[in-house]
Length: 248
Ligand code: G3P
Ligand code: CA
Image (cartoon, rainbow, N blue to C red; front, side, top):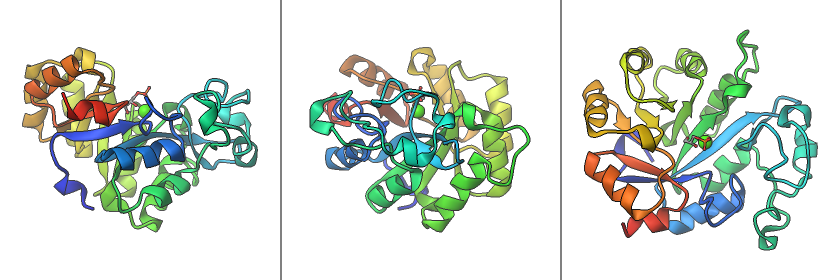
């Protein structure tokens, strides 16, 4: 699977198929394969013992039966938590996966958009910094051509680019495309821009295409928004339910 040959429009399952499964669990990522998504999106951060764990929030409170900050809990403790029951009792026993476990589960089936959470960024850039661990793992799994790494913290992406000149990078932002985006797109040779779909306009899509990057808005749900965004010329959609998008 090579990121340069992805189809359009690309359906990217947000946190797995998080409309139908507990987000960021192996069940949600397997669900994305079953749903025929082209790519999964997931969130990665560091545990207390500096392991790569897949979870969206800074705490485990919302998506597990535990409490506390993710970076205050060891991976062993994090993986003892039930990450499925909060969503539906059918998913009791689902665990918070490591990034390695997710990559193993989906390799060869679909592309992976790894979002590095901003809170995992460390200015001093230690030897086991989150971006270095992600990069090393992706290379070790021989999945360099199957991943797209994004973050709202563009300094983490800058570090990543220094580590690997070719790995695909996605610039995440809440605001519209502007000169700042243009500067960073060029500086990092970013593959794509991932904006909040609510700020997107056709001129912005055109401007980012002119920069040479693809546009993958998040998190798009519902037929009206889907049709509108596809008509604007976006290249893919980060969505909670790829099944629903397909019939738009
Ligand atoms: O990567 C797109 C989207 O996931 C960013 O927002 O809060 O769902 O991580 P969030
Ligand atoms: Ca995310």
